[in-house]
Length: 232
Image 1 (cartoon, rainbow, N blue to C red):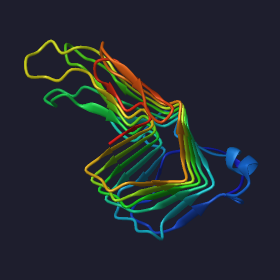
Image 2: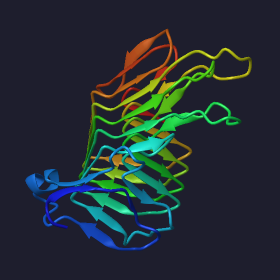
Image 3: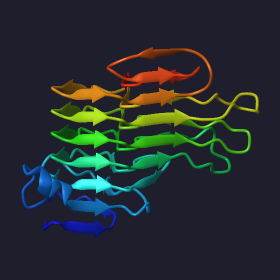
Image 4: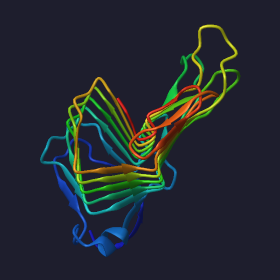
């Protein structure tokens, strides 16, 4: 793919293909080969059982907005390789749907569920999950940079920085949860996640009022703010 700005949302639709810029190893080319999601959903979607031969390589992935999950990349029941990419300024924003109990925002940069995705040599920065509150229901946020659920995935040689998971509001109805903000950089649940040779820094997670601490050069604050860098 030649350099340029491509305003679109891509779904691999189960095809095991290689999508690559002209030179994934050249940072200037990666910077100038842009897939812009235009706030119209996840920028790139893998959810058709794509395998390990499916590759995304050498792009800037930006301006994605996932409804509840997966702002930059959404990966469900698939196992692509994502390398030499820059994921920045994407978000997953919690939407309230009538009849849905306490929905959350998950995976601002990358969302993986039931996946064996490999993320390598990528920069994941300035992505966020926003747990909006609605009509007395608190909103929670998980994995501002990356979110893994029931996944056997790997992160290697990556920089994950300046991402945030921000929950908001307090519940007004009995039996509903308070706002959580877990895993500003990385959130992992029920997963076998390998992280190697990667830098996780300056990420943030926050919920309500309460305590704070540092973890992996990151901040977590608020009564339900946990794992500013990594929450597992």
